[in-house]
Structures are given as structure tokens and as C-alpha cells.
Amino acid sequence: MNPLIPKAIWGANYGAGIYPDVGKSQDVMGQGFLKEYIPDGKNHRLYFPLYKKYLGMGEFLETIK
Image 1 (cartoon, one colour):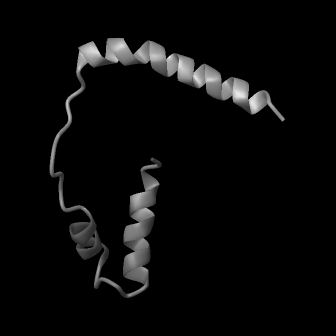
Image 2 (cartoon, one colour):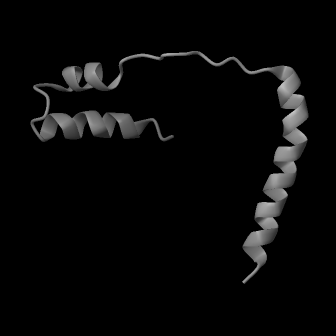
């Protein structure tokens, strides 16, 4: 995601009068994380070749009219 999108939303919330300042908008929108996900190297090795096939299929399908 473009890192400017959240900033634009915070500014829009403030500009629309939803929150009294950009800081309050940030506080409400950025309430933290519920869970942290850590990549599993074993799964990466298993799924990466399948992902490459998936990308190849997508490229092929885009050529069909």
C-alpha cells in the first residue's frame, strides 16, 4: 500500500471535521495490532514455486481475448 494513503485519510478526517486534529484521527485509526505474523521459511520454500506458476497462469490468461 502507498504510505501516503493513511496520511490522506487522517487529513481528510480532520478536514471534514470528524476529528479535532490529525493526531486524534491517527489515534483512532491506528489502534495497534492484534496479532503478529512471522514468516515460516519451510512454508515459503513449499509455496513459492506454486506462486510462480500462479503468476505464469495470470500472464497467460491476460493474453486471451
